[in-house]
Length: 512
Ligand code: SIN
Image (cartoon, rainbow, N blue to C red; front, side):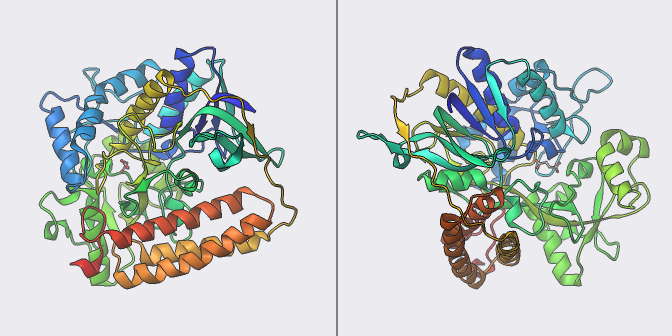
């Protein structure tokens, strides 16, 4: 198969980019790949919203400052300013494409507040902002004739110069080897441009707010063709996921609920955040998550409580219908009961390094969204900056990739080498559990030198076993994901070992 633009991932980045390219170049072909169905993305699960300067008392300067403070000295100031200035455009464009936002009585956007923000600036649609973004963007995509959406297509590897047959091979990305899950067959899709927008990796941990698809595929795929990956040590844990022991995806209790007055309490019913930060429940995520872990260790508890009982019932119902109903379905009446919560893996602040145009160091490979590292988040992402960043960089990738396509001459791609043997699924499940266990115990909110060393060694052994299985057995999505999970876990550990000063979400107790 051949296309002009290949988009991997169907979240806000992949869809925004595809719409923009398709409208600008109606004669070019765009293919969007997603390994699940069209609703499977991290964006679909986003609750809080998009941080945009809208209020009269707010300013770009204040939003920039909040982002820099949260990022703990590691943000790129120019990137921060550039992204934040695009907030109003992002809001206007999404509205034009049919997205609904909650409005106040004057018809202006209702602005929420989350940890680390000094002003109300989070535009949102109830507590299902991500699902509303995806609804609007998919509707728009369906009107574009030059976009082909291939769901249930899992990318096994990117095609690089190693995989093409011709003498003057230029380094770069030439497309992807893709498992068509419906036909159970690997096909090569050649493309002039590839946008990697495959999201995050929360599933390498036992407990995460991320859906089951978040297995670090994009970062692993890019790394395997020599893209630069950085800041992987900065894994952000969301302070308040619902405490449930046996779930692959923990239900998120949005930080925006603390923005309207929810309080954190120990199991004994005592407030504790005053011991850690004067901003209390609205301190940035790294601080609140670490404070919870300290309290859990101090008291020997498994969870803390989130108390919403003093919030006006109508307001809570109107703004957070999804949280109210999800808690109700689990037997928790948020109007009267305390909600048991615990920090869980939520977002990778690092990823594929890109420049100000979204270009990676691999020719024709762009990256946008959680999979990328632009310099916006530094050592700790400010809440609700990620959807904004994903939208802004999708636009940057679009601008650059349509203006400057390196046309690739006719070339042949190596055939995918079929393997006949089939590995037992139970073995893959066992290895996956092993990775999740290792990462949760040793690469969580608080790490140590010894843990990092031991985990690095264990992951190396697992990596070698999994590579051997991969080379000798029929490829399946489960096997491909496992291969990606072990690789990104190794990157988290190796980059954690290199960090010698604690900052943002990174905390190694031996560095104190
Ligand atoms: C939340 O709603 O608390 C999550 C928002 C985010 O991760 O930025």
